[in-house]
Image 1 (cartoon, rainbow, N blue to C red):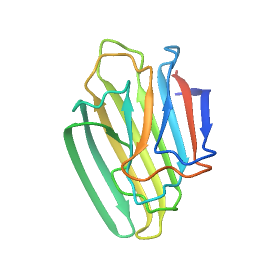
Image 2 (cartoon, rainbow, N blue to C red; image 1 turned 60 degrees about the horizontal axis):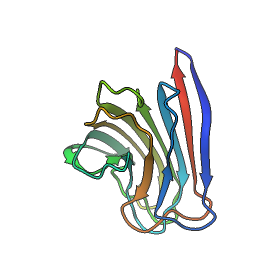
Image 3 (tube, helix red, strand yellow; image 1 turned 120 degrees about the vertical axis):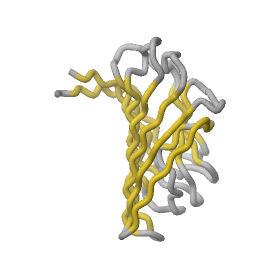
Length: 166
C-alpha cells in the first residue's frame, strides 16, 4: 500500500501556548495525519479535540512501555482523544503522530491511531500507542491540540497532512 502525504498546514510556536488549532480543514483526502514535535512547560499529557467537541464522546485503548515496564489501559466517555496518556516531563522532547482515519466520512465514527515517543528524563525512553474512537458521524473540519497543564514551549512544531491511502 502506498501513501501520499500532502502538507496542509504547519505551525511553529514563537511564543508559548496551551493549545494549537487547525480549522477549515478541507474534505479532500481520505485521512489526516498530525505530527507534533514539542516540549511542554510542566509535566503534561497531550490530547486532541475534534470539531471543538468537549463532551464525553471519545473512547480509547492504549499500551505503553518504558525502560523495563509495560502498561495498558482504556477509558470510555472521556472529553478528549489521548495521544499520550503518560505525562511528558517539562522540557523533554515529545514526538507524537495521530492518524485520523476517514475523517471526512459522514456515515461512521472516526478512528484515531496515535503514537507517542519520548526521551523522558524520569523514565528513560517511552513508547506509547493508542486507538481512539470519536463517537460522531460529523466530518472533521477542526482539530485542537492541547496540554493537560502548562503550555507548549517556543519552537514546538505542529504539522497537518492530508493522506490518500492507495
